[in-house]
Image (cartoon, rainbow, N blue to C red; front, side, top):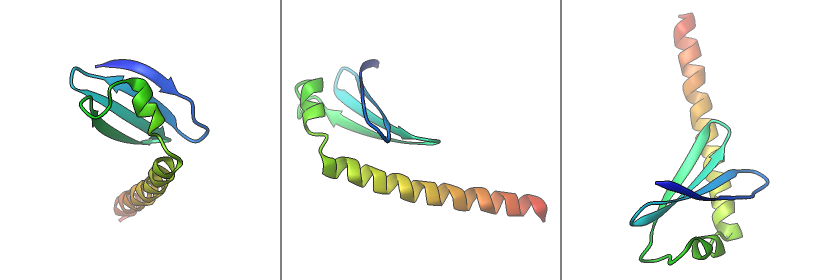
Length: 85
């Protein structure tokens, strides 16, 4: 797997990787990350992947990060509570 491109974004670190069969789109926000495996049969090039990074996709990723953050915080709170008992 190799890095194809770092895609600028104000809220996330977005990295596009390539393997023999797939592009892998990785979005990072703080301690969380989302990865999407995209078949090269559907996307011919890195430019094609970037072209389809719509505002709707980014907004949904943002919503998922918010859910992930809340889930992570609940786990951390439970661990801290267990340590005090």
